[in-house]
Length: 56
Image (cartoon, rainbow, N blue to C red; front, side, top):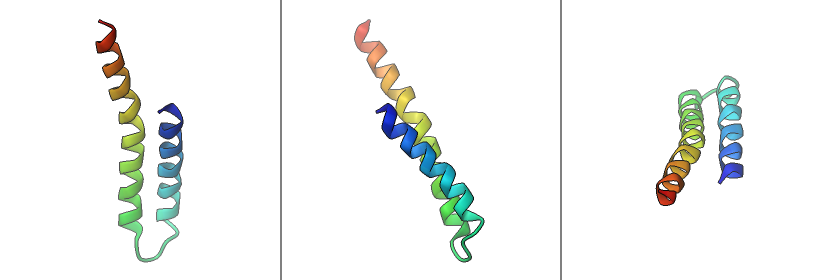
């Protein structure tokens, strides 16, 4: 899952940069970047919490 999170984070950051160069879809691409970076941060947090609860 770590590699998936890294890929989502990189694509999200790329969407931030792309949003400023696209003419018609700036807001949509920027919001997509926010969602991708948020998912990239949420996946390890939730999987780690779930794995820690199993160990207890």
